Image: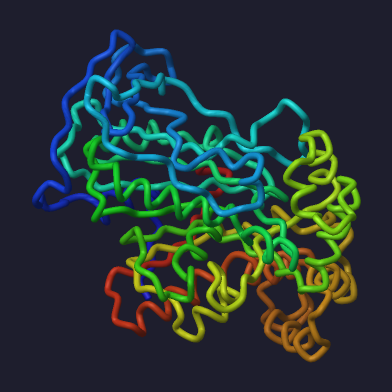
Length: 445
């Protein structure tokens, strides 16, 4: 397996440049203008962009288009359902509405949640393009999914202006997707009268929008790379194994950084959360889903703040038919060119407790059981053999805390990218890389 230790933008440059021009995907549309800024016409709608740099510099080399809807607002009867497509019927140029896309859209509802902060109407994406790029430029595209544990975060935390500005050879796209209960509420009632994992399906809808429309911004839909960090990295993996590999992927390459996979809840745990949510909102009758869809945002916010959820297993035929690790092990995923990796000390970021609280092997055992309650004693003892105690001859760990942090890191961050990369290589995919990012304090200074 190839190892890389270079920054992400260089990985993008090496993996993405050199797109070959092919026949146009669709007929050219009439150019539209606006005194507000550059306009991109999609046929069913047009958007005015902003070529002001984040620093305030006027007329930079990058044009930004924000708050572009890629699906219908998931409100009212569409709450807890998969995203519904927009009406993209091509209109006569004189009837194409021009929307102001010079600013960001509202983030999705966060956790902790507060009424008035964020919005349910949040299925929007952002596009950065070199100002010189136009339809026919056919530049490679990177689509970025933010992290945040599937409960918070937004594209505002990771703008792609610098990537596009420094490279001038890519199109950048970032995606807002539903989070917490609104994106990942599970349970039999949701499966029966709704959709599981609408947050992941939002991501897929955005990727399909990119396939249909990114050429209007100068992008090449045949050269799309998806990328993300933490929960965004996990999203990259789940998009790769979606539907057990039975459907074509709307992207060609994948970059997963610090893939964050927590323990997947059991069906009993999922049902317990659903019961608590419905009780908190006040929906305990027969038409519980109808009640949840008509509930006020104040009631939903209260439930969000009391319950933490992550993607759930859909079962056969679903978006996520099994654990990603099982799907990868059984070969139920689609081949992609892949880069995956993590930071040297990712595990220390989320180890619960301080170094002083990890003095003995029992302290580490308690920590692991708190995080993974279903781990067997046999597995635990095997882990302790693979990660020897600090006082064992040849142990790489100076402290018990370092030992616990490395266990946590390998389970949550390291294993998935190595597993997927290994399987892709077994299948004969050539462009597969793993990396570890190491920065010392001296390097930072």
